[in-house]
Length: 149
Image 1: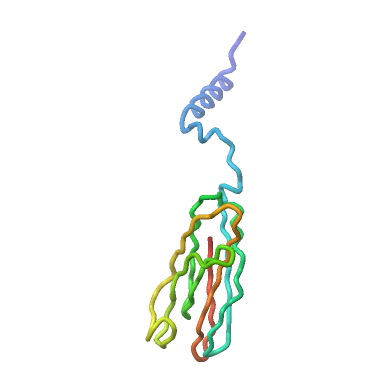
Image 2 (image 1 turned 135 degrees about the horizontal axis):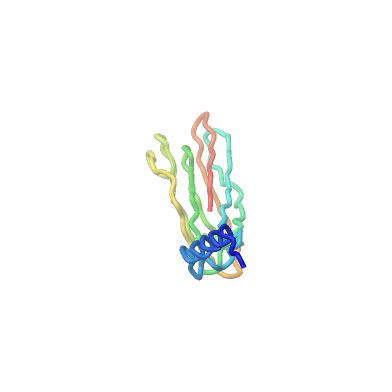
């Protein structure tokens, strides 16, 4: 019986390829959800000059995070100062303190120049988490903020 040289070559390439870069971890099927790992966005805007505003708390969908996982929440005040707070149910568990930029005085002191940051916490079983945001808007300026986790 005559061997097909192309078939032999392809089989050799396939065997060689499968021998390299194949660990037990690579052999396991990966879920698309794990690859896309929870990226959720929350944001808000408020446009009343010279006023304090406490945005309604927004629920954080953490379904893709395992119990015991550390959740890293990126919080960005854009410019007008904000204070970001993570709530576990109704309990305040972490806060960014006031961050943002202003030459005006406010609850942060005489002025503020603090960039976006991360707030981290460990997810517990059976808990619902919320993000609360506060601002104090200066004259003729709106507040906008963004969060990603």
